[in-house]
Image (cartoon, rainbow, N blue to C red; front, side, top):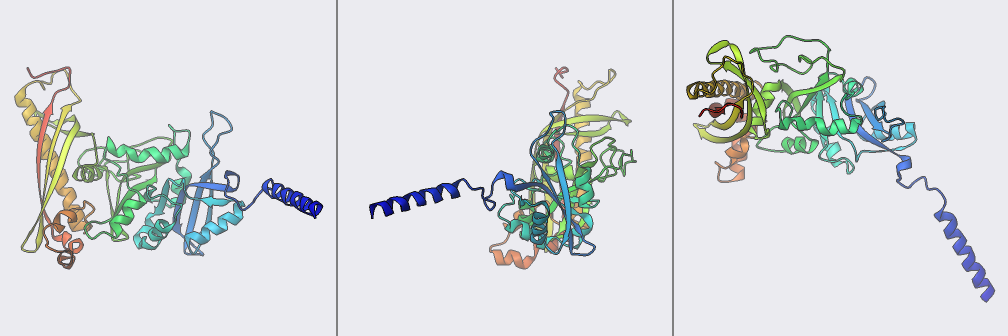
Length: 401
């Protein structure tokens, strides 16, 4: 009996050792996972969608080389079906936990994105901080042409480019979590980053003589990056209804208090043929909503401080009277820009991407009363008043004393 127990114990130990050191093809390890860094979705030709996955090995063979990324596309009826097909094709399991951006084509976004957004939000691997981009080209073209010049890692580029909104205001850092929250919200509408592929040409500006009154792919950029992100895609519900250029996106950033600093070019009050560059580094915007005879009346008040960053030898910007006139020029310029932008969101897009509805909700005693008013439909009838208070000074080398 003792010998039988001893032999049985040895057999059990051997079995444990064998199974412990046998490679497992079902365990989720770095060796059998493919980490997706970007997903692109276009309309399919044979199936509902054409879905593109960009993933990376995470290492470079040489320090001088960019981190290699790989792109595979498949047509499928759904996101999950596409993932299963790619899993079979590459013999690894796709993992979305490191996905940085989801790119939708403009054509697809115009038809509605709610089903896709709900699917992604329901996916446990995908992070709510994943940025959402609407491409004016196909999403496949956008991903293929995204070749960062100042970053060795494509993942690093996807991480940092939305942060430029803090110091330019020309891009809004929109995540899929933000989009979903606005989609189900009763007080605002969704928006997304506007992207495209650079034409490589210097195109004429649209209006106003400002280099950034332009749409994506109509910019004055010439370079090797390929793709670009400038402006904002505007939605009514889950459908794309239009886009904002760079300056209009700055207006949105100001209304939302989402920009830390920015550069503004205004007409020189002493010479209308010249422009002065103003560096704004301190601003605060507030909004007030009233319902007058059933119609929204919205007041936007902005206070900002800045200094003149461009100067010529003959300019006398140290004079207090001149500084006051420049401040008034800034007020006039921004009041016009913001007023035009706000009316564009209401009368053209009928979309409250600014989130004014949260101020309107406080005017009603109960939530059902607010819902009965139907803010998102009544926003198109809104009227606006913009008040600016600018205090502009000279740079640190010149004082007014």
